[in-house]
Image 1 (spheres, rainbow, N blue to C red):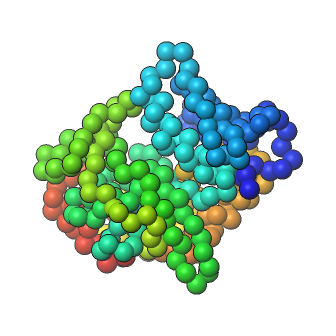
Image 2 (cartoon, rainbow, N blue to C red):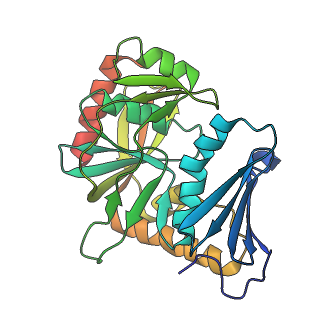
Length: 278
């Protein structure tokens, strides 16, 4: 079932994501589906019940950036329109059996933390977009594998690549360094824990604390991959999804020292903490 309400009219705007007052994306209902618009970059016509998309780059747009948006923003939007739960999270497989997700808005350190975990032989499960499936109240939700190239900002990339050796590294159109470490062969696995990273000044050692149900709900509300819904039905749906995740999966705040540098010793300490949580 599409995420938008049944009473919406053709060409009605149903989502606007405008962090810090700058419009990043808008979503409209059209005659035969939806149109996702990223101003000055591209529009994406989504049809066939959110199962197919046609990419229309704007004149002069950077096609590399269009590709980045297609793999992240478009994919997440199509999943959300299909009724799926999609976290803004990267993730790893711990001890070859369970998924630990690192969730948060852009700039919170989730890709840096995921890269540190990947250097400690925890295969990357998904980067930036994590699809979650709720089963029964007695079972942990399951997570579905996604793309696994971790996109790092300049400072953490430089620091980590001084001592870690990914299988491949490349510059992206949005100015980041994408690195590939070991990739998980597991397609679907139980989601054992969600980590909300916090990189803080004045902290010497990493530490984790489990959040209360209310704290987890508030934290996860900022971690939905597609946000900015305008209709009441869609907002209620998003609230219910956040509540379901917060009630089913332990959520932790993991504090790490401010960096760079991000050294091997920090990676080992963080990995030991995460293994204990999983």
